Image 1: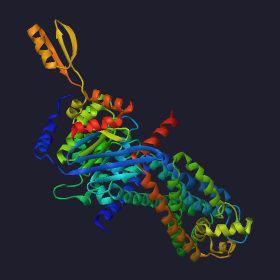
Image 2: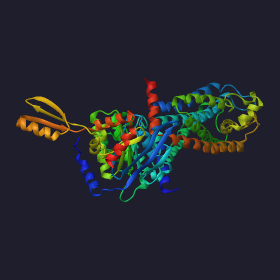
Image 3: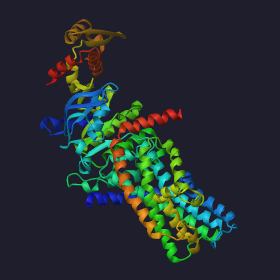
Image 4: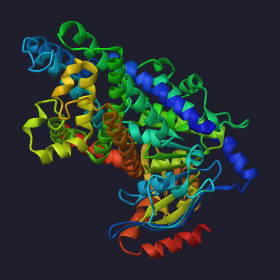
Length: 325
Length: 284
C-alpha cells in the first residue's frame, strides 16, 4: 500500500517544489440528466498539470459520462467545464490536438498492421508540433516503449488482448497529449497484464508531464496509478484526496498482527503503538512478522459507498469535504 | 485550407490507398467487388443471340450495360452504407473522431477507397464485355468519354444516398433492409425492364431520380448510337444526365454531411461499448 514505484519520485519532487501547477481540467457544478434520471448532480473538481487523478465509483455512478463530457463526446445538461482552457462543447480540432483518448479497441482496423496504424494516426498530429513538444512520437520508438516492436508488422486481429490494449495506449499518446483520458483501462486484465499496463502508463506520462484522468472501479488500480483519488457516488464527488488523506478520514481501529512461536495472532486496537510496545515488552525477540495496518482504501471506499447508500450521502460529502480542505 | 487540414487530407488519401491495397489481400472483400462482373459476363454472353428490334444490338449487350448500372448503384449505396454502419459499430469512426481533423481524413479515405475500388470494378466489367459480349462497347471515343464521366458523376450522386442511409442505420446487420429501397430504385432505372411498361406518374417519379439518368448515361456510353431511338425521349439527353446527376451529387452531399455530422456528434466510447455488448449477445 505504501510502496511507490521509483519512476514516480521525480514527479513527486516536482510537485513538492512547484506546489501549484496550473489547472488543466476544471469542472464546476457539472450536471447531467438522461430524461428524468439525474446522473450527475453537481460535480466539482480540478486536475492540475502533471497530475494523475483517478475517478473511482460504483458502476453507474456516472464516471464514463463525466469523462465523455470532458472529451467533448457528450453534451452536458449544466455546469461549467474547462479542459485546456476551453469548453469541450466548443472545442475545435486544434483543441483536440492537446487531448489523448485511450479507446477500448474491439475489432476495428483488424486488418491493418500495427505500425501502419500507429503511423497513420501520428500523421494527424504533425501540424501541432512545437519546439518543446515535438509531435508526433516517433512511431518505432513508441512501439518499442509499449513493447510492440516485434509485432510492428503483424495484423492487429492477430494480437492478444493485452497487446491490443498496449496499442490503444500508444494511439492515445502518439500525439504527446497534455491531457490523457483512460476509461476503465484494465477491465478484464489478469494481474500480470494489469501491472505491466500500470508501468507503461507511468513511463509514458511521467516523461511528458501529462495530466491523466482515469476511471476505474478497481481500488488497487486507483491506488497504484493515481496521485489523487476522486470518489464519485450519487452523482457528486464524495471524497477528493490522496490515499493517505482518504484513509485518515475514516475513523477505523488499526489492526496489529504478529507471529509468536509459529502462531499467528491478530488484534484490533485504537492505540496500535501502545499495543506493539506491550507485545515487545512481553515477548521480546520471539515476536516476528509484526504488521500494523490502517484502514485500507477499500475500507474507506466501502464506508463511503455504505454511507451514501444508507441515505446520509449529503452528510458524508460535507464531512469529507471538511476533512480535506 | 490551412496546414492542419491539408495534412489531414493527405493522410486520409494515404489511408484510402492503403485500404484499397488491403482489399486485394482479403478474399471475401474481393469477392464482394468482383462477383457481379463475372455474373454479367456469363449472362451477357448467353443473351447475345437475341436481337433487339429497331437497333443494331442484342439483349446480351443491353443486359450487360444494365449490369454495369446495377453495379454502380450497389457500389454507391449498399457498399457505402455497409462500410459506414460497420465502422461505426466497431469504433473505427470514434478513433477518427478522437484525433485532430480525423473525421476529415476519414471522409477523404472513404472517397478515395470508393473511387479506386469502383474504377477497378468498372474496368473489370467493361473490358471483358468488349471481347465477350457482342454489341457492347462505346461506339466512339466520344462515347467512351461519356461513359467515364457518367460513372464518376453517378457514383458521386449515389454515394451520399448510401452514406445517409448508413448513418441512419445503427445495426450493421440491418443494412439488408436497405435492399428494399434499392430494389425500388433499380426498377425505376429502366435497367430491369423497359420503362414504357410503367404508368405515366411512375415515369415522372423515375425522371426525378438519379438512377434513371445514370442508366441512360451508361447506355449512351456503351450501346450503338441508334439505340437512342428506344429511350423514352427517343434520343440521348446527355446534358440532362449531367445536370440531374450533378444536382443529386451536390444536394445529396449537403444532406449526407448534415446527417453524418449529427451521427458523429453522438458517437462516444459508451455507445461503441453498448454496440459491442449487443453484438456479443447475438454471437452467444
